[in-house]
Structures are given as structure tokens and as C-alpha cells.
Amino acid sequence: MKCLLTGNEAIARGAWEAGVHYASAYPGTPSTEILENITKYKEIYSEWAPNEKVALESAIGAAFAGGRAIASMKHVGLNVAADPLFTSAYTGVNGGLIVISADDPGLHSSQDEQDNRYYARAAKIGMLEPSDSQEAKDFVKVALELSQLLDMPIMMRLTTRICHSKSVVQLGEGRTEVPIVPYVKKDKFNPIPAISKQLHSKVEKNLRKLEEYANTTPLNTVIWGSKKVGIVSAGAAYQYAREVYGDNASYLKLGLTFPLPIKKIREFAAQVEHLIVVEELEPIMETEIRAAGIPCTGKDKIPNEGELNPDILRKALLGEVHESIEYDASVVANRPPVMCAGCPHRGFFLELHKLKNTVFVSDIGCYGLAPKDIAICMGGGFSVAHGAQKVFNMEGSGKRCVGMMGDSTFFHSGMTSMLEAVYNRSNVLLVVLDNRITGMTGHQQNPGSGFTLSEDPTNITNIEDVARALGVKHIKTINPLKLDEVKSALAWGMDFEEPAVLITRWPCVLKKLSQADQEEFGDYKSVNVVDPDKCIGCKACVRTGCPALEYHPDTKKVVIDHAQCVGCDICTQVCPKNAISREVK
Image 1 (cartoon, rainbow, N blue to C red):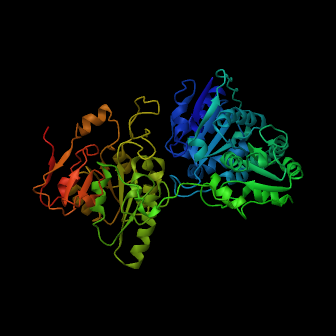
Image 2 (tube, one colour):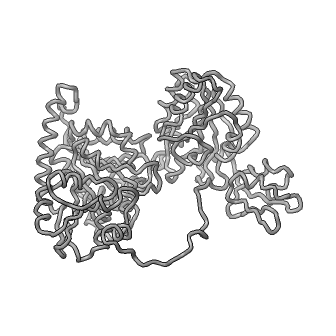
Image 3 (cartoon, rainbow, N blue to C red):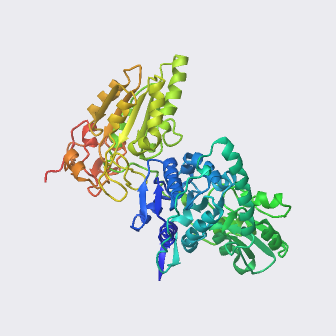
């Protein structure tokens, strides 16, 4: 049977067909849907992990126990998981282990566009790169077989375009039930220095075996066309090159991209007049090919910033501009990201930005839209604020720092970040914006939500209890939609010379409320209306940034879009004329 699948959906199908036993991940675009689709296959045990490091560690444990395991994450997530990744290259596996890195060229939803192909080289593990959904599915089985054959984890590198684009996939006949390999106690699972010295030699030998395989495997295949131009490429970049050149070039299409099949590349280069390496972001393959003494063209023409597409390649390599519809870009309205109407963060941010002589340190998530001065990475909201506060204290400027992060980020890596501030007695205000779910990536469960990936009820980790256990003495939980309560809480939190924790607790406006949510927060949604006789057109409500509010220049009045409004009442609290009220049902 054939189906139209995204790359993420195809990987999930491939995991099921290949007999995977265990899958773990932390949600992060563009990788999130891999695990969300794996959970549909009940033969695979799947779970959300608090962060990418523990996702990979648990997958390593599953592989040591003899199962076939997968850990998936976005590219910056692999930074978090790098510690176990490098060591697992030494220990090897017992069952099979795939580590999936979903890179984000073009920064569609990320803070950087790092090229994680470097990780395979640094960790010295094999790497596969599918170029469409069919290969995404098929490569899962190949990766697991290689992992068990060579006793090493195998990395699969995807990109946003492969993850989210759909193509036709020929499904397998069913699931291959792979028996769990019996666990036998081995020294390699305990990599102390004396053992690791021996394991390093094994890693180098396995890489040489894998390079021999790379030169003969059909994963790396030649597609002959005109021999005037030969293109070495992989992943989505191959599809772009094929669209530009068609049959006017020959292609060495790589599926196994580390170790590179240098022998095969040399043979291919000898049969074409001009060799071009087409790859997204860094000149990784090009550098290795040049180092092997093979002349080629690459990043001297192709940009190493942003996501590639056929138009970019056509212009860079052929000097041609594809015909397109002309339009006046100056008349296109900019659409910056904005918090949803009724977002529980809006009221808190409104009061926060009124603080003077204060530096706001945010984190990665919806609260990235906060009135912030600094943001670095997941979990950094507290520790960065702590470090900055220490220096502000030294200089005597009186500046204060407020660190912010969401509930899922707090469980991801914010707890140790909070501990840093508590242990070192920092006079910072640490704010956990608890919207009761993992918001920006699509409402995945987390340790504070009360449900697992499979929607089974589970233990709830209480943020107040965690903060108290970490040694925080001053903790307050508030409703962020009540502006007076927010203002009072901020003044309270800034009045201490040691860490204070403020928790804003209200569900994401898009969240499907659980029974516990309904009992705690009630049926609060409604709509607000503007009394045109009272409205003076001051735009105080519009300045809250709520997209449900519209100012009409012709009438000099504000109206509310009832399709978006949920009656959060922020606008009613800022209106100086009491012109906004809840609609009477």
C-alpha cells in the first residue's frame, strides 16, 4: 500500500516496521511529530522525557537491555544530549540505537541554524541522511541493522523540509518482530578510563569498516545523466539540485554521509567534467572531498546561510533567475509573531515592562515574546539572570534581574538553573510561567500536566514543591490575568535580597482542559464587548497587543473580534473609561 506521509510520519512507520521496542524524545520543532506518530503504534513503548539528555540516556539503557531504541530531538536538543551521545559511541549497543537530529536550516523555529553533521564526525558514529519520506522510513531499518552489526549508535540527520514535506511512501507488509537481545553484563557498559582506552580502539576499527561499507552500499548511488556536471549531494539538497539540473547532470546521491565514501566519490569525479558539492549550511562534505585531493565547486558559489531552494541554486550555479510573479513587497503587511488572544502571559508582561532599572532575561518558548533584554537557550533564563545580577551588584548600579521560563522548560533544565541561583544566594526574581502544558511545540504533556504521552494519568510534579525542595524560601503563585495581583507580586518579589520565585498559573488559551483544569480554573471563557459611547479611542487596550482588538480610524473606536476573544479581561482592566465589559449571555 502507498501513503502520502511527512518525513516525521514515515520515520514513525519505519520504527514500527523495523521492530523498535522503545522510543523517547523531548518535543522540539521540526522533530516533534516523530514521537507523536510513534505513540500510535502500540507495539512500541514511547514516552516524553523531561529533556533530550535523559531521552537519549533512557534510549541507551533500552538498547543496553537488548531492545531496539530511538531518541529523537531537534538540532539544539542534541547539544543537551551530547554527553551521553559521545560516550555511547564508545560503549556501543546491545540492541540497536538510532539518534535522530532534526536540523532547522533557515531558522524557521529555532535560535540558530547549527549543522549537526559535525556531531557524527565528533562522536565518531555513522550517519544517514534521507532525501524524502520513503527513505526516511526505509533508513530506520537500515540504521538499526548497522547499529547492531557495528555495535554503535547511528545518527539520522533530517532537516525541516524532510520532516514536514509529504511524499509518497510504499509501506512495508507489516512489523518485523525483532527479539530482544539477552542482556549480558559487559565491561564496555562501564566506561571508566582503563576500559575506555580499549573501547576507543574499537570505535576507530568500526569506522573503518563503515567506510568500506559506504563505498559499496546502494545507500550511496550514482544516477547518470550528462557527464559535463557531476553533483555530490544528500538529503533535501539533492532534491533541489535535481530540480535545477534534471538530466543535464549526473548525481552521486549519498544516503550514508559519514563516513564519506571517498573511494566512490573519487571514481565518480573521474567520470565527470566538473564536480559540484551541493549541501545545506556548512561545507562539511566539500572540505573532506577537497582534503582528499578531489577538485570541486561548492561554497565558493552556494551560500552557507539559510535554507537552500532551487531558485537559490539556479542563481548561484547557473546565473539564472527563475521567472516569477512580480509584486510590490512594500505593500505587504509585516506579520510579526504575537501572543494569542487570551494568552495568560499577556497580563504578566504588561506589568513586568513597567519595572524600571530592571533587566529581563527570558527563555525559549512563547515567553520569548516577553519584553526581554536577554535570551540564550532552554533553561538559561534563571542562570543567565543570576550571573548578570552578580555583576550588577558589583558595579553598584542598583539594577535588578528578572529571570523567566515556562513550566515545561523548568522541568527540562530550569531546575538546576534555579538551584544555581539558590545555592549562590542570588537576589534575583525567578518567574515560572506555568500555562499547564508544553505550549509552543503543540501542547505535549510534561511532568507537571498529570498525563503521559499516551494520555495515561500520572504523578504531577508541583513546581512550588520543587522550588521549596531546592531551598527557595519565598514562593508565591498568582493568577496572571489579574493585573493588580501581578503588580503586587512583582513588588513583593523584588523586595528580597535572596532568590524569590513567582509562579503564574493559568492554562494556555488553546489548551484542552482536563477535568482537574476545569475544577481548578472553572468555565472562564467568554467574550468582551466595547461600549462605543464610552470608548474614547485612546488605544490603551490595543497597546496590550491582543490580536482580538481592532482600532477603526474612521470611527476612532475599538471593536473586539468575537472569533478570537475569550474574555480574559485584560482589556477591561486597562481601559480608563470602563468601556469594555463581558458580554451578557
